[in-house]
Every structure is written in structure tokens, then in C-alpha cells.
View 1 (cartoon, rainbow, N blue to C red):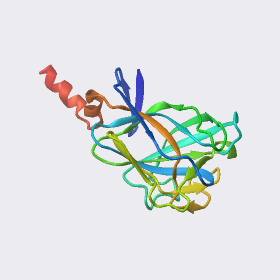
View 2: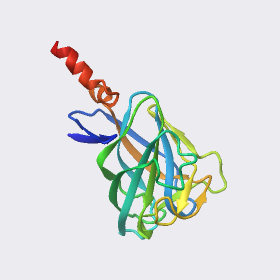
View 3: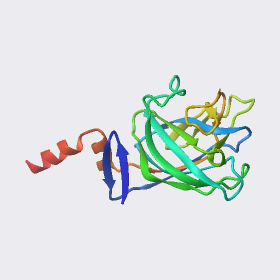
View 4: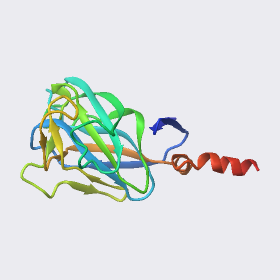
Length: 202
């Protein structure tokens, strides 16, 4: 069973249909935290795990914070105001130029259908800072497949989330795994679960 946390509520998911993975490009620049926007093409999604390129030597570990906010991140990258700390996980680096293994989130992160959700992934020590890509380019900010579009063009340096210096275009380098939100959970996200249950009891 998977657990999803959204707007202060925990939703238990008995069954989840496996969806897939979206991958970006290898890194070619510094490290810190990276912003991205995820927009489902159809059903809502649950982010389940991710892999990245980290600043630490192979085998080193460190914490990574995952922050979320509804809508776009433009204008909201210098402060955690309006953001929710969705999870903190421990990663193991595979080295600065080698993609790490996938780190599972403690609770799947909900990306509702019909809109955009911003996600900020930031390392909290030097070893867990994410390396990013985009130096000298403007064409590697958008990645998409049949299920979603991922846009990423801002990163902040250092090991303090929302701190350091901001650079653009700088994009997420790595992979994100996701599942589809089943139909009953989608109803619950929209506040219709209780209504449907009430109708069935009549």
C-alpha cells in the first residue's frame, strides 16, 4: 500500500497502476538545488522515486529535501514561503558524472491532474547537492513523454535550500519515477470521495 500526503491529508492507495520514468540530460555545471514544474498530460501522478548526479564522491551519503507548491515556481525561488516540505530522503552518490541509484520517497508525492505542480529538490550538505545541466543552452529546459511535461530552468547553489546564488538556464539532471493516481484517489483529491460514498449509501 502506498501513502500520499496532499494538503495536510493522508490518502492510502490500495492499488496503483505503474506508469513510468522521465529522464533529462547529464549534468554539465555546478551543484545545489534544482526547481522543476511537472504537468500531467492526463491522469494525476504520484512521484515515487528519483535518481540524480550528486556533488559527493561515489559512496558518500547525505540528505535531500523535496519541496512542492501548486502552480509555477517563477517568482518563488528565493524563499520557502508558499512551499511545503513534502519529504526528506537520504541519497547515496555515485559520483559527479554517474547517475545514482533511485531513491524512493517516504510518501509518494501527488501531482494532481489538470494543472502544474512545482517541485524543488535540494541537497542539505555538500555531498548531496544536485549537479545540474544547461550551461550555454536554452533548449534543454523542457522534457516530455505521453504522461507528463517536465520544465526546469532554475537552480540555486549551495547546501541551504532556497539559499545561495540563482542561475538560469539550469535544469534538473536525472530521472524521476512515477505512478498514475487511481480513479478513486483522484476523486478524493478533488474532495468528491465523500460525496460519492454518500450517494452510494442512499
